[in-house]
Image 1 (cartoon, rainbow, N blue to C red):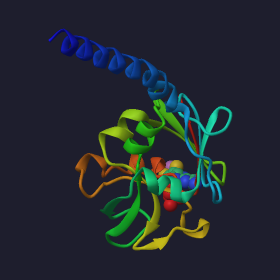
Image 2 (tube, protein in one colour):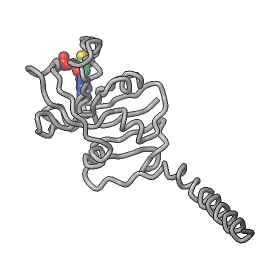
Image 3 (cartoon, rainbow, N blue to C red):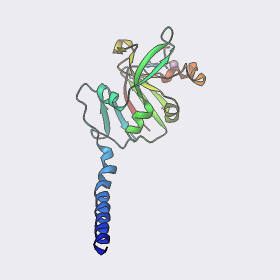
Image 4 (cartoon, rainbow, N blue to C red):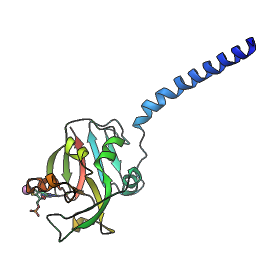
Length: 176
Ligand SMILES: Nc1nc2c(c(=O)[nH]1)N[C@H]1C(S)=C(S)[C@@H](COP(=O)(O)O)O[C@H]1N2
Ligand SMILES: [Mo]
């Protein structure tokens, strides 16, 4: 009996020790993001807790796809009829990066920059799209990343004033 109680106590002690050892790596491990192997198509800076370079998180396309592959079928102001977009949602990307703030500044290859409220990007499944109808978006057709709103699904997103948030040729994001 006594031995049993002693053994149970020891097991509990070991369990507590294991949790104490694992805890720092569970929290500090948040800063670990693999380095991109392919060409970097997106850099994220600002209020993020996960990085893979000093002060920023850099992604190649495979890394973005590893976070999630989501689809949005929607019409746009620049295409005829509904199109099938594939990409990762801002929800998942921002979550992966531990992003915290009020807005993002989306910056494009042509140096176009637009402020977008964070709430708008998490309230809806807004995509960072890398393909349309199964074809990778090239720089010539608004790639490598295009911010795509699921506007056919949400009437409140069918607003011309939102067109400025559909940033194409996106290259970086600053979280503020
Ligand atoms: N990369 C990039 N994305 C952009 C823009 C831009 O100049 N560059 N213009 C934005 C603005 S202000 C609007 S209203 C629409 C403009 O689309 P349009 O040029 O086809 O009217 O795209 C948005 N996305
Ligand atoms: Mo615009």
